[in-house]
Each structure stands twice: as C-alpha cells, then as structure tokens.
Length: 440
Image 1 (cartoon, rainbow, N blue to C red):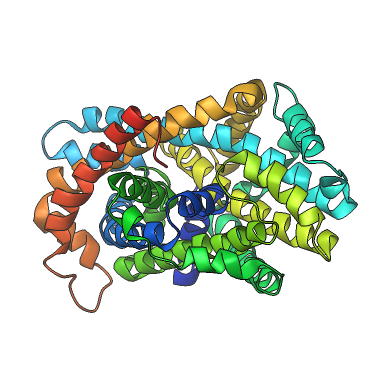
Image 2 (cartoon, one colour):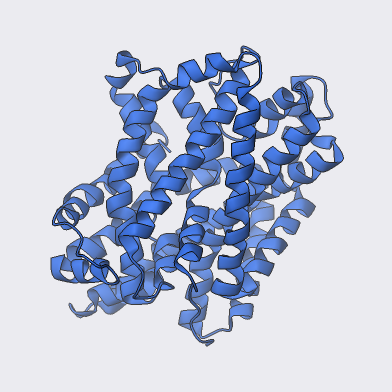
C-alpha cells in the first residue's frame, strides 16, 4: 500500500471540507426551502441548526477520523477495539462507506447533467429554446435511462483524474482552485441580479420575518433537514478528510469555517435565485433538478447578457458538484487502499469502473436512488459515527481528540452537546425523513 497521503495546509483542508459540503443542496434546495417557508423565517432556524450541528457533528467527525488515522471502517473498528469487538466495529463501518459510494454513484449522474449544461452554456445550447416546455422536454430526454452516457462518463473521468493524484496533489489543489472560483462567480451573479428590475421584491421576501412561519413546527423540521444534509455529516466524507489532517491543526476552528462558508454559499444561492425569479413575478415553489435545468435556464434566457450569465452560473454549479463528488468517492477509495493494500491508482480505477457501470444503469431512477440514500443511509451513518465517537469513546478520549492542536481546550459544553444533542438528532432526522418522505 502507498504511504498515506495528507493535506499540506490548513486552508487546503478547510477548502476541501467546504467543497464537500457545498453542493446541490445549497443551490437547488435552499432557495426553494427559504422561498416556501417564509424567507428569513426559515433562515433563522436554519442558521441555529447549522451552528449546533457544526460545533458538534462536524468537529466530532473530523476528530474521529484524525484520531483513528483511518476512514469509517478503521475508525469504527478502533472505537470498539478496547471492548474486544474490533471486527464488529469494522462491519458497522461498512455502512457509511457503502453509503458514500452509492451516493457518489447517484451524484455522478447529476454531475453528468451539469457537465452537459455547462458545455452547452458555452455553445449556446443551454438557453437556445424559446418556450418553457422545450426546456422541460430537453431535460426529460436527458434524464432517462442511457440518456446522458457520454457527458456522464466525461464528468467521471475528470473526477477520476483528480483523485488519482491523491489528497495533497489532487483533492487539495482542485478545491483550492474550484472553491474560490465558485464563491467569486456566485457573488458576481448576486451583484448582477441586484440591479435587475423587480429584484427588490425578492429581497423583501428573503429578509422578512413572518411570525406565522416561525411558529410552524414544519418550518423548523425542514430547516433542520436542510442544515443537516448541507453540512454533509454522514459518517464518511468528513471522517476520511479528518484522517488526513495533521495533529497540529485546530479542528474546531476548521469546522467553524466549513459551517460558515457553507452557509454563505446557501445564502448566495438564495440571493441569486429568489430575486431572479422575482424579476419575472414567478414564485419559487419547486426545487430539485427542475429548478436548475428547466426554470433557471428559461429565466436567464430572457435576461440582458444571458449568454454570459448562463456560463457563469453553470461553471459555478459544476465546480460545486465536482468538489462534492470528489469527497463522496474518497471514502470508498481510501477503504480499498487500506483493506486490500492497493495502490492509489488501482483503487481509484476500480471504484470508477464500478461507478461508471452502475451510474449509467440508474440514470432513469436516480431520483428514487438518492431519496433512499438521503432518507435512510446518510443520517444512519452520521448517527453510528456519533455513537462510536461520543458514546463508545467517552469524554476523556473525545476531548483529547478534539483538543489536539488547539492552544486552549474546547469548552465543557462540547461533549454533552455532542452526546445528548447531536447523536439523537441524527436518528430524529432519520425518523422524520421516513415519516415525511425526506426533509433534506
């Protein structure tokens, strides 16, 4: 097995974690959730949950991975090793690893769509239609079984090329390029939209606090789901990234930056999309792929400078999708390296080959595929990791793992909040998702 790679800088690690968190949930779900749940009345509980999950779940998963110097399987095994149940821990750790691979396979389909629309933005194809129905028909023809093979394989090859170079030369460098560009482009879009006639109505809605929505339990439920899934706590990606971190790094500080910039990304998406919809008098009441591939291209096509705007928008979206996809693939790749003593290149190629075949086969059912994973596997993986770290590890080990690299120890609040708030929240998200058909 190759010598274990690692991040070379704190900022590189932080950007990689930000990249893993910033994805389609920020772009096609947050603006919709905010729009239908009272604007700022939704954003307030969302930020509350981001803070609570960020200062427990993200810190916990990063610290868990660093302490074990391993992905979920090795980390879970080490957690139960002192109880003579290392093998059981490793078996349980398979759940978040397989979840990460399955999520990566589904996400590959989505990034394939984005790749096609990004290239189409440059050629003019993406905004070449005159009627909303034409945009819907174009997307419908692509989002079917075997409907986007070439672009999907192309996106997967790009991700594979980055992953082959490893953590420092591949993942870290790619995120150092893509994440700053993403934020600059979306900030530019937000400024552009601010000067469009009618945008003020969108801002008025975003920043309005409606007591009716604040008092609605469902608003808080969906704010919890949005925060939970946006921060990518699932017992896999954040654990594996943490395992590449040096003992000199201050994990709580890095976790704070991840939560901060993920929130900024979501707010920027809201400040672009909601006011943009307001310029036409349209209501944003449906999210998901339809927003990204049907409604927004149709809307942007009628804006001044549409060709430039659509290019900026889809390049930013493509970078967000790529950085998230890189993170999702890293846990199964690292597992292949650790458990089968494979070289980095062989592990990447094997995982990419499996993903290529399966992702092509599930193109027509990818929505159901992703729903199952987000409802069941992601919160389960996060909950299992929380149990292993907070409950099995115990206070002494937890605080030692978190305080490593810090100038002053973390507050006494951390352990009880992680053990008695974050761990149950993972299973509450699981149950609520099962009842409501998904809350993220």
